[in-house]
Length: 196
Image (cartoon, rainbow, N blue to C red; front, side, top):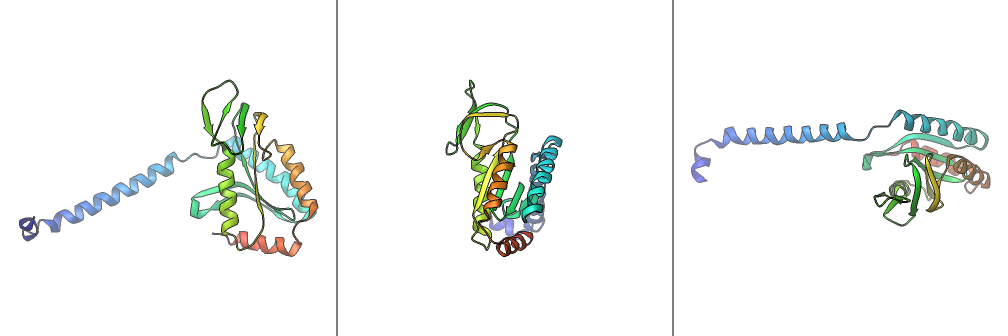
């Protein structure tokens, strides 16, 4: 080893190794970005359609609707974030189809008659809501819902797994209840616009 250092060969090899590692890191990042799930046309249409309906509620009662709200620290986004006098609501879609069997606290759910399971979509949405609540400078309650447009929810024991019409009715009822004042909602809207 001492001979290697004395020979000045390290002057050539160290930069080669550093460049090699840097290239490897860049390629890994590019591959992760390439294989990250992209929003499908169906998802985009569902998000935009629901956002229009929710904006009808906020136009009557105040509030805001954010679509594709970035959680930069988590490198994720929230499909729809609904802010009203009823609180703050994280809304996500799941394209899972069929008769679902699951509970809000179970780590996995499955289709009735199928032994294969999949991650409980409520847990990921709950984590996003918890992250938002923990990092906002406001003490507002952050609720979450997952909409299942293609699934039968008869065997799902979770009040936050809903169909779109149930969600709209629930959010309108919560908004009418006016848990928060208009000034609190305006302040929260300001915080969300500056959220990093």
